[in-house]
Length: 275
Ligand code: ARG
Image 1 (cartoon, rainbow, N blue to C red):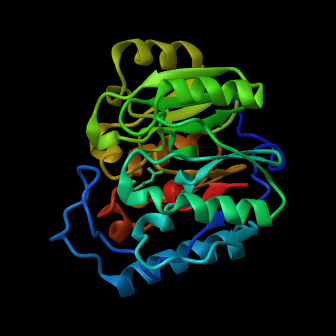
Image 2: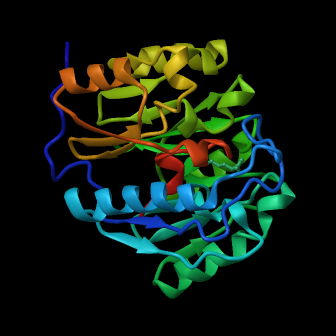
């Protein structure tokens, strides 16, 4: 059975946190998309980011908070990895790679200043925020293996008092959960099934009553790295099959060019953290 799209009020985040791409570049390689010799066109990246920001704040009337970019932390533009927000609690990330650990204190400071209760997971466990932890209704889906550890997710579920489904990632091109899974509402989600371990595939097929299975060629264009705002979905362009499935279910799709950010392994979702 097809599920109706959510009411506008239901699934909209209160606000999003973004960070302008002033210092964005591919300066190191920590995922298979990144190649230091494939340089980012800085002007193009700024234009793409601006268009996205303007779509969110203008047409879609979303409140977007901004964090100041920091020189030497090029991936800080991917705010979704900074942590996970639930009401007024912020669980700060422990980045897997040393290249991104410098971002941690900046997130912590921003959230403290903005009145959140900040919590952390004990190292050595890694946790990369919303990149690997997404709410579908009141249930938390967590992706582990490449960037986050299941032990961290277990602790987070306890800290937040929410149940969770830990699903193991299996394809290093889809190193974060938000590169291959996007909840749309309580019953429907986009996912690229083959990015998951066999048991995780079963969990997804069992628990998502109206799945939209994204084909590989569109998953590789980051179709699942979508931001869902009520009945509006912002996703990368070049994913007509996925967009068509969304439209059939009553969603309005806004497809944008994120090509410069894909050089670093991210697109729409990675660039915005839900507040
Ligand atoms: N270059 C970044 C990294 O590898 C990209 C992060 C993309 N973010 C995401 N939520 N998938 O850490």
